[in-house]
Length: 358
Image 1 (cartoon, rainbow, N blue to C red):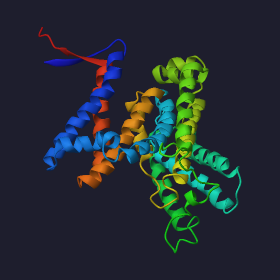
Image 2: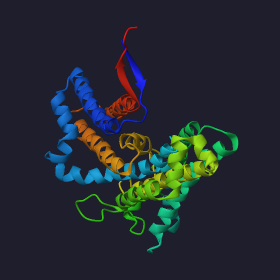
Image 3: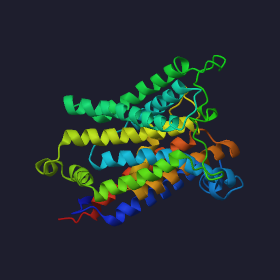
Image 4: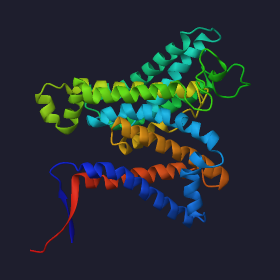
């Protein structure tokens, strides 16, 4: 017989090994699943994880790695701050959508004017839109004791309906022949977010993600607020006795994660997506939760996890095109990755011992 024995302190080895094991287990299970579906498992895994970097189409897919990873890293950095404090923002997808809508609204209101101030104003509006949407669960938790998990999650569906209303109503392109969707912001020079260096995939969203990684590292390791966040997550009662105000911490964490998610939505709306449509939400907000946990809530880990998650997006698209695999391949991989990550994470706090008969 075997039993779980609590460790006196979390294992540093397993904290590092858990994400690696989760990735390996996901690849192995994915290969088995593809084999059962009638696909060549080796070819499927190679297409998803190898071909985007070194295959025939790598010249196109490598730059896309940063395009996909940018919003994931930006959102995950904000989520990680709250998760470290035990504040669970599950609704980053809704904040992402509302940030994109708010930023696009500034561009459409200014159209067809030109000016250097338009894009910075859009970025501020995008951050403000995400912040405002993130503050709704913060206020409801602080004033009424509501669960930020449920409130933030339900607000995702509200944001999706607002995006659909905008695409079919106030933001519909008057020159779009009645089709739902706003003007193409990529064709509006003052509001466009193009590739900054040809062939690299770097746009303002990637730059913002890099600043977010550095900023979160400074916050969590060099600032008193980071100490309060870590204390609230590891010892909530001790943090309160030390003078940490729980309500202020909730507002800070949900507001910060909402603002970063809103900025990610704005950069996506002005870059790869190009417009607000009824299906603007891309799932980045939910995928960023996996990125945050896979990166162990550490900025450097989040960068690596974001690149890996972006690789699954690109590889899934290639596999769908080349091997005729289902479109849900990426979601299956992401789900298995989270499953194994949470399962193996048990080993960071517990060790498996053989039960000795009395």
